[in-house]
Length: 75
Image (cartoon, rainbow, N blue to C red; front, side, top):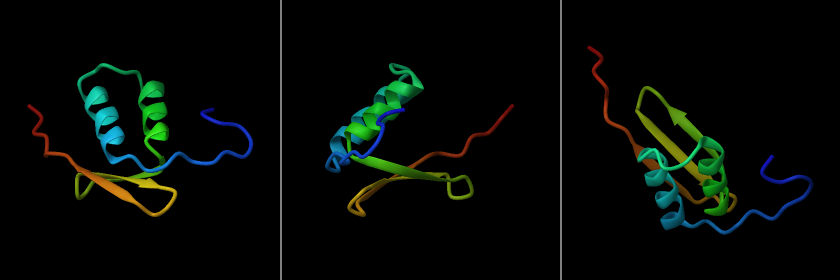
């Protein structure tokens, strides 16, 4: 677990989140490292919309950041 018991969520940090996303997309982090990076950036949950090809990351105060993903054509 990232935290146990009661914990105050870090403040929303859009730049920190984007840095965690880009490092993960470049294959520079493991999934647990990515999740810790999201938590450190103040992300408390995320929602994936496969139809819209987006992932929206949410902070505890209602802040959000949406990442768009291009469609993929399989051979």
